[in-house]
Amino acid sequence: MRNVTEDTITRAVIARHAGAPDARLRDLMTSLVQHLHAFARETRLTEAEWFEGIRFLTEAGHITDDKRQEFILLSDTLGLSMLVTAQNHSKPNGCTEATVFGPFFHPEAPHYAHGADVGHGAPGEPCYVRGSVRSLDGTTLADAEIQVWQADADGRYDMQYPGLEAPRARGVLRSGADGRFHFKSIVAESYPIPHDGPVGRMLDALGRHPWRPAHLHFMIKAAGHDTLITHVFRNGDKYLDSDAVFGVRQSLIQDWVRHEPGPTPDGSVSGLPFYTLDFDFVLSRS
Ligand code: BEZ
Ligand code: FE
Image (tube, rainbow, N blue to C red):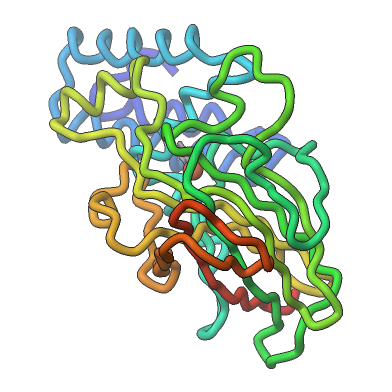
């Protein structure tokens, strides 16, 4: 096709994809081209603005490596990650809701026995976490795999400390015969998502902050059930209504209960104030 115009270019591009052997790819690209062109038409995109967009994506590419994923941060801060999570993991009423995965999961976290100190030296006030895993019909789920990971008192994940060898504030446990689990860790604090790159500058230019409310990440796997990827958020956090990545669900907010120094749930005596957190997870059958 020659002499494409402002009015015919969209159809021309889509027609060029007609022979794509993968029908799903063809449908995705057709829709993407339609929306991209509609955006340029609706905004009367200028050449300078188009080039600024190219420059932004180039910078995002340059800062991305195996530890830093700027494109996921972009997706998160534009609400795309939460939208995809919501539409792929809508659960029956009564199940624990899912939320974003985030970039700080590590597949090789240490395995711990019940009651262990998952914090493993990470800075923070002590926190005793107790929970259970059950199916929507109330059946307790024994031997479920529970992965937990969290930021420390400085709002950083272990992998954000250059040169830190041993994993901290992350681990894998298994629920007991009664579906329950418990571990010691530290109190999670709110933290800014990495914002020293193009996504941070974008947030700044939009008058947005990069903060996430304090939370614990959980990934729970049980036979015959959908894997649950979620957080438990700390009640009272000042960022609950302005999470930089739109991940907060009311049903996932819980009290971290503060206790004065004294006897702790694991039978020891703490000389410092400590916290307890209780949360029960409900999984849907697959
Ligand atoms: C997180 O909760 O770990 C996270 C999620 C999205 C972007 C950055 C961090
Ligand atoms: Fe997080």
